[in-house]
Image (cartoon, rainbow, N blue to C red; front, side, top):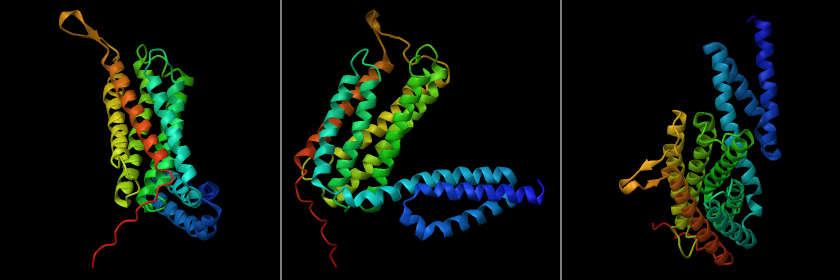
Length: 298
């Protein structure tokens, strides 16, 4: 690649990066856009000089991932001042209860994916209520937990909607290899969502934001994380190898079970009960005062 072509390519990359910065809030861009563009331009030149085109691609992959996370956090930070309200906690609690009920409905035979989609969406209300209940005392850890919760929820929805539209979630038993990518994204979304709820649970415990059932958010987060790992083990691993996770297991006496189906139903029931418990807790504590953490002794 000659110098003029190289310069044009790097210049185009910088223009694309500058355009992507619109994901950040306006005030953030006013303060940091010039410096961020300059750092990216220098990093781009260095990456091309060291590793050529592969270095540029690698830089873009890391840059896009970082931009997605940090822009989301900055957007949440900008709007968080409007979130710390008893109304947000109350409505978030009600949404969480309804989402939990839908999780219980989703385990019924032939319920389809609609109850799951609605349950996942309503879970965002529970996340917002839990984050708002901390009244701004969660700090960066609470904010990171909220952001990860939103990201995990988005991945779950993307996996379900994409998998349903493409047929990848409609033929899990007949075309396991074809369906495996959607299941992998769904599992990853559950794990990320679980980690986010765990962080919110930790900050709620540390800041004494909850008066009753204080360990429930932490337990719900661990349940989502373990559920995502179980989906990965029970569904994705055999499906990625072309095996049907719904294959029958024979037991003594001629009885048979569907291990994958029972696994989904078990996780769904536990998630439903967990979201219902979280919603009741938030709704009943919406107007309660948050106990500030005790100052450290000298």
